[in-house]
Each structure stands twice: as C-alpha cells, then as structure tokens.
Amino acid sequence: MGVSRDYVIRITRSGEDALVQVTPQVSEHAAICRARLLAKDGDMVEIWRGMNRVFSQASDYSRMS
Image (cartoon, rainbow, N blue to C red):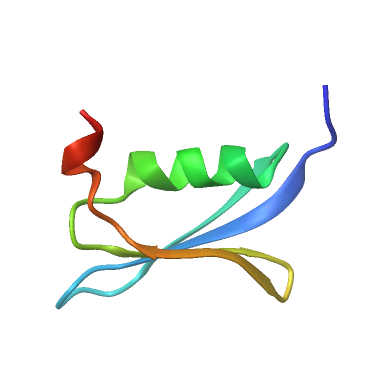
C-alpha cells in the first residue's frame, strides 16, 4: 500500500462558511473521491497538498448517479 499524505479539502458553499477537512490519502485521486463524497451540487471544491493546489472545480455531481 502507498504512503499516506495529508490533503486539505476546502469546500465553499454559497452563503455559508467554507468546510475544511484535512485527510490522509494515498493519492490525489483518493483525495478527489473523498471531496466528491462531501460536496453538494454547486459547491466550489479545492484540494491542496502543502502549498500546492492539486484540484479545483465547481461541483455538479447530479450527473454522476
């Protein structure tokens, strides 16, 4: 199994405070999957590893069902 690294998932919701979660994951892909579980339609999602933003996207997960 790979080595876990800490990723920061930041989810911004309209009219609300941002949700920030620090989570150990084995890859960027795993961190993105975790963010998808937390995000709602219309949220802005960013994933950071240290000072590097590795992912940024406005979510529209209604199409993924």
